Length: 231
Image (cartoon, rainbow, N blue to C red; front, side):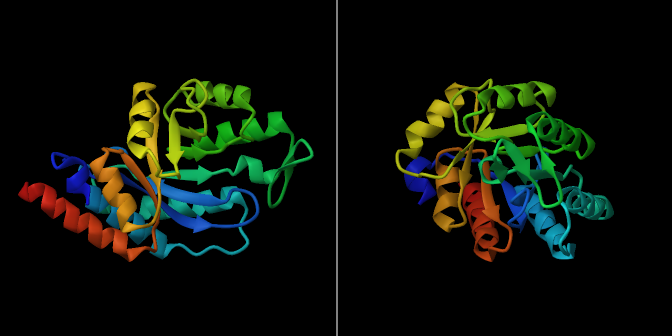
């Protein structure tokens, strides 16, 4: 289907792979490489790292430590950086003007400071929904504090608030991608289906957020890469 959208596309989306989900605290932990020359190799190493990991009832930072340790163990297998991302799920963990983690409760100032600390210490590449949706001021401060080296994902079209946007609704996707790119906001397609991958290729969306356990995605990445090379 990607050829019907744009037969001249030469771009595979970088895989933003969800490797772990949980209910309390941060809801998702992800892997992404922004400098991998081989998209397939990036997908492969994400899967390999995820297969080595085992989590118990770990707190959020312990999970980050475990993931980073595994990245460090396997980094000699690739010639690019693999970095960690998190979905803070700001709306989900905010109750009574506090942010509720699995092992702690924080006010806004503490929560913001904790996110900046984690982003700096673990060189986080992607932070989704760091605050409640309407707190645009905190989004903007966080963007400045992370020096724009992190993809801060929110739901506004304001590039000073978030520099990436997760596209969940695929209706009118062409216009949405174009609008985001004009605003210098990175579009990211959210989805686990083969169709989502084709949409990302056809509409030149640079990143695809997906679940790492979906083997169909890897096979389809390979097939599309072959089609692109064949012209």
